[in-house]
Length: 263
Ligand SMILES: O=P(O)(O)O[C@H]1O[C@H](CO)[C@@H](O)[C@H]1O
Ligand SMILES: O=c1cc[nH]c(=O)[nH]1
Image 1 (spheres, rainbow, N blue to C red):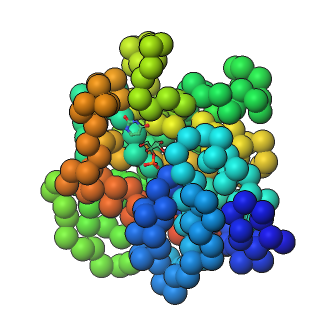
Image 2 (image 1 turned 135 degrees about the vertical axis):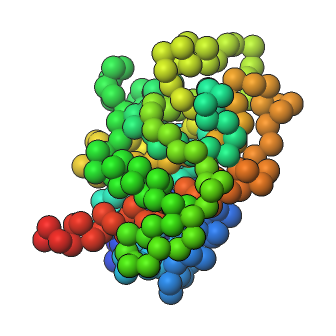
């Protein structure tokens, strides 16, 4: 069956998918797959399939913002994807996780408009526990020299990004207008970082019976003046993005192995 917006056929889609905002990042991730091929590039949605550590998976870009991203998540799940990991960037709320760090999102504050049109206020946007466990394990493993699927250890990276886990905030606004975005309250309540699509991913996945997780590379401070200070193109951010990509690929492959063992 053809998905009308992503322009992909369900027959071509594997059960496991990495999703990310930027079509260029999707292409970058696809270069890490064996036998990668591009299925479609429709609007902001660029879809690749290929194999990583023996697992067949898709890499798909969802663009910026929850409404467009939700279209992508819906069509992927309709096409047969059951497990999704978002590989994104986010602004930090804490000096404990500065630019160049990596955070696995355990739940997302629904400070967006899209999910309000899907579920009642108070309904939680939470990650799947198995996907999150696999992501945390993989994110800690990358750079440690250990490779779960291989017997031999490679070299340890003493400067590997710091890995955290916790609550992220999903916003609609990137640049501020005249209204305050309540960053200070989210920060005081213990949220670690802000981005723009994770709540949509968790809500759509929960509604449709799929499982989802998310990992973000920190590219600055969310409550700083983004118009003046935002620079996601530093070496530290690039290294954190590389780290999260490797972690997400390993996590999906590990989940595929677990699923196969349970069949
Ligand atoms: O790097 P990605 O995945 O696009 O994620 C973040 O970056 C974009 C804003 O620059 C938003 O999509 C936000 O969620
Ligand atoms: O939404 C986002 C993404 C990256 N960095 C931010 O500060 N906000």
